[in-house]
Length: 73
Image (tube, rainbow, N blue to C red; front, side, top):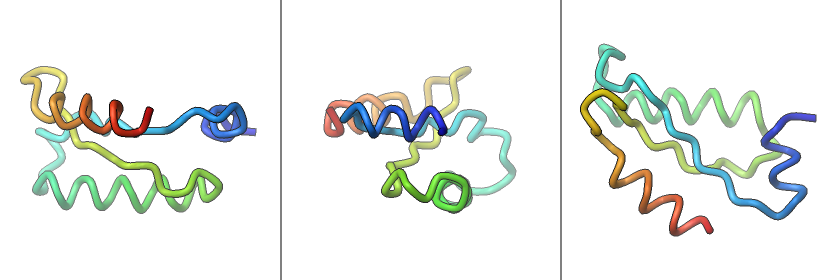
């Protein structure tokens, strides 16, 4: 059982922070879509949690991430 499955079984919401968006070589939306595809394929029982591209170095996407976490809670 994955950590995501355990979290969902406990009634917790999921949000995926996709770090390193700045060095992916594609736009933030393309990066998000690619990570979303991987999450959907690897964790099909999670109900497609939102994926937020972020860069921890610059802070890119952190506001959007915090909004997604607040909305999911």
